[in-house]
Length: 114
Image (cartoon, rainbow, N blue to C red):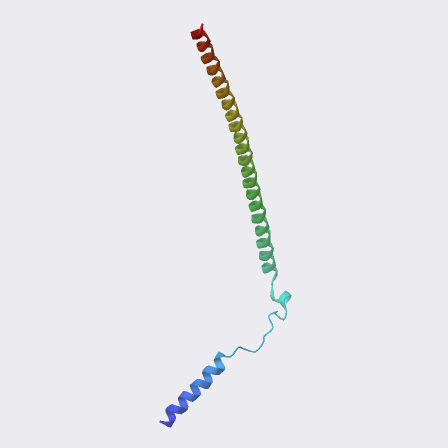
């Protein structure tokens, strides 16, 4: 029984020690320049160049999309203007037709009165 209790207590101490955060370690390597070889530098340079080219291509695509959206907005504005103008003209035509109808009706009344 004492061996079991001793084992459990030792396990608890081991768990507590394991659960603690490790001591502060430095995050910067001691010699980063010496650790990287010439080939690694070339690979890093090529990856940076590729990332820059990708970013440039993405910027071009976004610019094209923005230009297309601007063109659509201009087309919608033009269509809205045309629609408003057509509505105005149709209202004008309706008003003229109503005036003509009233004039015709007045002429018919005048003819009937004679």
